[in-house]
Amino acid sequence: MKNLLKNFGIVILTLLLIALVFSTFRSPEDKPEKIGISTLIEQINNGQVESLSIEGDTIQVVLRDQDKKQQEVKKEIGQTLSELLDEYGVSQEKRLAIGQIQVKEEEGWKVALRVIAPYLFPFLLIGLIIFFMSRQVQGVNNRAMGFGQSAARQAKQDDKDKKTFQDVAGAHEAKEELEEVVDFLKNPKRFTDMGAKIPKGVLLMGSPGTGKTLLAKAVAGEANVPFFHISGSEFVEMFVGVGASRVRDLFQKAKKAAPAIVFIDEIDAVGRKRGAGLGGSHDEREQTLNQILVEMDGFDPHLGVIVIAATNRPDVLDQALLRPGRFDRRVVISMPDIKEREEILLVHAKGKPLSEDVSLKKLAERTPGFSGADLENLLNEAAILTVRRNKKTITEEEILESIEKVMLGPQRKSRVMTEKDRKMTAYHEAGHAVVAHFLPNCDPVRKVSIIGRGMAGGYTLSMPEQDIHYKTLGKFQDELAMAMGGLVAEETVYGHENMTTGPASDLKQATHMATAMIMRHGMSEKLGPRQYGDNEELIFLAQEIHAKKNYSEKTAELIDEEIDRVLSTAKKRAEKIFHDHRKEVDALVSVLLEKETVEQEEFLVVMGTPGAQKEEKIKEETVTGTITV
Image: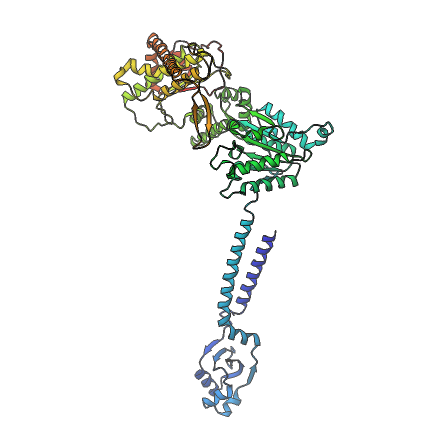
């Protein structure tokens, strides 16, 4: 408001000055004609002058003609009219012929302005420069004084972007936990009368894109209380003590606005374990963490300020943050299941003209392992693709293509491939698809394509029919054989000496899977039920993850032998299936070379099992399906 009044005053003053300047000038039509002294003397001698008006060094002349023409003559300063006329020899008779002679006194301010103006304007210019420089310095001082203030922003609760639990699809268990927080903020007396204390801190844990920030906004919207949000990285600066000062300022603001919510996003930026960073316990990040711990532990239990924090790395947080009295309630937000994905798609489908052939339920089935952010991006990509194709509604074709674009990247149709490369890619992908189809524990093959996407030259897309929560040894073995299908196809058709770099990503995927089976899941009879290697994060330098070796060199050799055995067995199984069903492989290759892409229905026809449904299988932990390139 102060800035508005100041700017308004400056505008009014500027307009007044402009009006004053323009008022001193007459229009060109009113300006008298400027003439010389000799012309005036000639007019006086001819009797043409009706009146003279003298003011300072200016003589205003009015002639006797019909238009009463006005003229202006400049004379020397201090010279009188009589002296001027005497100098030019004007007779007394001609002087008397002038109708009227009037002498006006010049106003004092005009005289003073004429005298001091040449000196005044430079001083004014210098004064203005000094004034603006001092204002700039004052602004810097104000910013310096506010350097330790919190950059937390208070969300407005009356705007159109207000979120409630109705805007959050899925995450039913998480919403139930947070409803208690909302109830406490609305009716704290119910809890205090029972002697109950609401958790001072709520930690939202989950993978990126699962809706942690959205849930925090929904809590603020439901409770209709002030909502202060800030990122963990905004506390830390290069100057020591600034982060702690900002923490104090943030909690001071929240206490004044209580009941209120403080939301710290990505708290692992300042909440990592202490004593492992450069500088020991004296670096800026750890001082900021210490201040957060002090502020949270010093809360009045009836104050009504609740801290909500979000992170996708709870394993690196300091234990002091997680103890009772601070972040003592942990809400896990997992990846949405098929029902929750359908609810999320329904929310994000609002405002998008979907075609009648689009089934959100089928779309939820095709997107296992997608987070809420992935599903939002999926429908957005489908809408963009629809606009590019000049369509009025979003059809199933755009949505299915958007799924692959989100998972793999855009198509590379412009990539020029020789017929030999196309045929080799077709055999590679056919090897994956056929092996997966005839193994009982592999997910159904949804699509096979030899059109490149992202970094892949072709891909085989297989997805489960329902959400998977546990993974069996049999499923691991079948997926390893599927991963080896491309390598087996190239070796069988073109020979070992003509192998390409195509199977590199398959071998990497298979090696990681076999290593996890042996070292993490205890799926080796030879090594027994034990986990080998203890992965821990080293925060000291580069924040790299290294495996802590908790076994002997002799055991390391056995681990290598077991990994080799698992991979070799998977390759032999893939070779057997490939040779037993070579006819189906060749048929699929012919269709791929002709159409480049084969959908699930057509794939089943080529395999000789149209409309067949795979038998029920034990399911694994939730995954995004299998993409083999």
